[in-house]
Length: 455
View 1 (cartoon, rainbow, N blue to C red):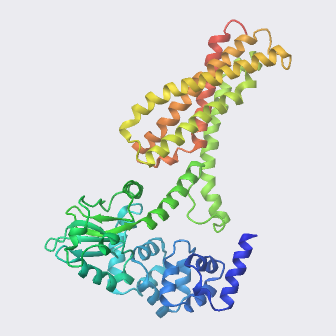
View 2 (view 1 turned 120 degrees about the vertical axis):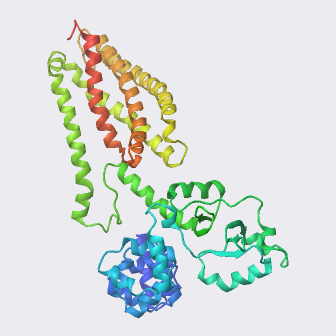
């Protein structure tokens, strides 16, 4: 209902010719509901600054199609007014032939900036940064800096942080907040109102997750990107980090669900693309689960002699898979937040082993109590050797939950060591791994406990 009300509100604004009065995010929603030709017509009616802001907004679903539908002169003007980082993102995801045609519309300066930004890896600070920041030489006064900000404000991504450079070497010396600048003496050197500590910086090759961690740790609105000699290359702003982390989290959730990450919104991805994203992992998991059937075939004789053991196979498999999935989730998140490094694997193993043992014992006691309760109350008869069956289930749960916790916690480390995304250790994958090993553990325990009785 709310979606319908929002669409009606947007449509009424469009009919009244007042679309430009809406928030940029609302305009993007409206344009997404139109065909490229209709969206291009609506954008052409907007002031240039608003049109560029709409194309800058990351929620716009198909900016390439919209630009391709515009008149070349209008598209060129909008491209020239867009932020450098958004422009680079746009061309990074663009395919031919629109890429070649739109590249030709860029000014030489914009083309050079985009080319410089595109050389950086996709998930790096260099790919996130913008070159539109405010920097001044340390020889300037506070008053001169404020006048400069007023002159360039409309052309910069943010003015909340001003970067003070050495007048000769142009190396970054200090970072000054706009608040401290406004409250400073206009005649004082700009460096005198800066904080004493050196600015927090990153190199362009640093991963965007590390950038997000630093911005969160130091409570920054933007973080400078510098080269090895401390020359400023650009800045990464907090809004760009939020967008990047939203995308990263979405990818991790998809991977953790046992499928390839979607590169488009769910409602816009095609049927064949959806099949392609899901079928591969599903087939891999299916083939892996075949090992479960092979394991059961290996213990076929034991199953024939003690059919009662089959009653607890789902219980055993799910408990091991659940404990493994829990451990995997915890370690993947800790690795993403920088709380753990590869070298910490042994600390995790020492922590998860007793944790798994305790959790397995807890579930084992519950399992034994359940079998005893059902037997004593007459709900189900597990046979004359039911105490041994209960002991088998209890010991198996201890072993399987312990193994699941260890395997689930070590798998993300192994994947990261091999150069893969730890999020690829999806819950279905961990569950499959523990299913197979769990059956082997279960029937091995059963052979030891029930040998000479049921087996």
